[in-house]
Image 1: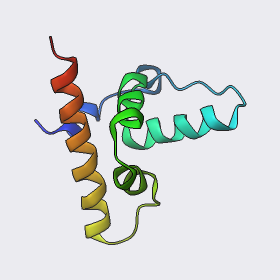
Image 2: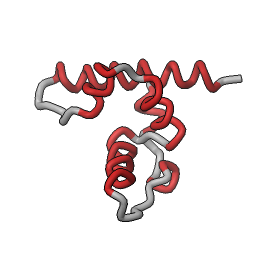
Image 3: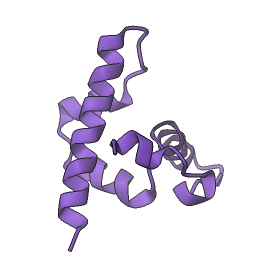
Length: 88
């Protein structure tokens, strides 16, 4: 099963989205909602992604299939690495 399908059924409560009024927390919540990531996954990606990968993930998704594919490919690569590192 793909990474995206595993994350599809996550709710806002599963993602840990809370509105605190803090600009940075709200931006993080937007990223969590957009990609359906939890706190641990967001922290792992922010610590381990290269500058180029950060640019790809934080860029506004374009209308082209290529830009969307780049985002999904990068996200799947990082989440696969996350699963490898966190699996006992």
